[in-house]
Amino acid sequence: MDFINLLTLASDSVLAVSVAGLVFVAGGFIALIGINVFEKMRGRPFGRPLRQLILTDADLPSVLVQIPVFNEPETVVGALRCASALDWPRDRLHVQLLDDSTDEASVAAAARVVGEMRDRGFHVHHLRRSDRSGYKAGALAVGLAQSTAPYVAILDVDFRPPSNWLRKVMPALIADPRASFIQSRCEFANAGSNWLTRAQGLMLDAHYVLEQATRYRAGWLFQFNGTAGVWRRAAIEAAGGWSSDSLCEDLDLTVRAELAGWRGLFAMEPAVPGLVPDQVRHWRVQQRRWSNGFVQVARKLMKQVWESDWPLRRKISAMPLILVQTFYPCAAVAIGSMSASILLRQGDAAAYAPVIGMIAALIAVVAVGMTLTPYLVLRRGSASRYLATLASLTPLMIFVSLSNAPSILKTVFGGEDTWTRTPKSVALPAASEPSARI
Image 1 (cartoon, rainbow, N blue to C red):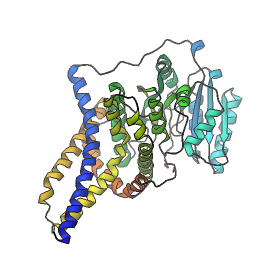
Image 2 (image 1 turned 45 degrees about the horizontal axis):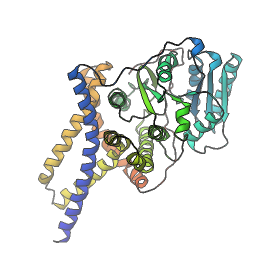
Image 3 (image 1 turned 135 degrees about the vertical axis):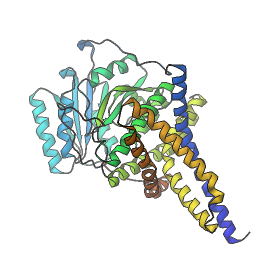
Image 4 (image 1 turned 90 degrees about the vertical axis):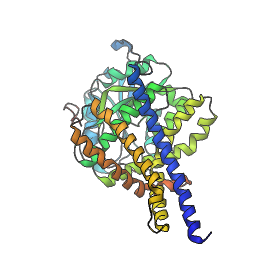
């Protein structure tokens, strides 16, 4: 066998492994699509509706609202005012602004609104740290140590829950003593700003409406998304508290809480509006952080999941979630190895037509199957807008796969990364103003 044939064989082998990874990720989504189809055929969803309690004001527990912030003067004022507008007994609503900011604008704006809230009788603490050790997880842990509240609501600084949010979700969390958290569906107020935000809106609607909700109904592992959720303090403590050894502290805590015997809840309504990045370079930063964080969680907890007493079906169903970000390096490696193989065959792509056809079919099934139902259920717009947005997903995912693959592969082999805030340049309306829909 000559050198060219050896190179071709090696390239084909790499292609086969990377395509197998893509099939694995696609299989997880196809399983979710299949569950939804089956639910529609049987006429009712799996699982049970969220349990609710009828609570009087006297029954309502103390809730700590934590708002992590780092150099975000354009959103911190609205976040604090939105927290003060939450419909909850004032003596049992405690707000912490976890401020790691280094710019004077953010600090000054926050201090002014905190002072106003205190003058109005709110329990609000402007907690500043001298360093960013542990990043968001570190800030959340420091804040939690300074409170005794049994429930902790976490809101990123660009999210604006409706005033009735706690009234709607807390009864379900209180009613289930084994529930670790309740995650609310998120909407995105700037999702109609440009083609990139529309693409993100389509993908995130699929994530919440089809992926998160279906995993919850099926009794599978699903993640806390880092914002728009309320945690039971006892579950955080049982899981070992917040950990900063992953860039995805939310997924990390979710898995550890599940391993400790807790389970999450998911609420479709009321939705909590936030923001998505409106520039490609900012979105790329966000995707890189998420991808590297998922890899770190997989390295840390995969063994514990397989050694746990979970039923085998639960372990298997958890894998597509924990390993979902392998899509990006697998896609990048598949593109590179296929291109190399075709060049080594003097440009003859005929041998790879079946592989290309299979990948194209998987992309079509997953893209349409995951996004069409949420688009229709949430009444996001016209058919032409849906098709145009759908068409933008494939090139966008190829771009981020190729641009972020080196960083992700570095993390796979033990490299470390730093937590980088995702810039978001559009300000949300204040709590008293209606939020725009996608």
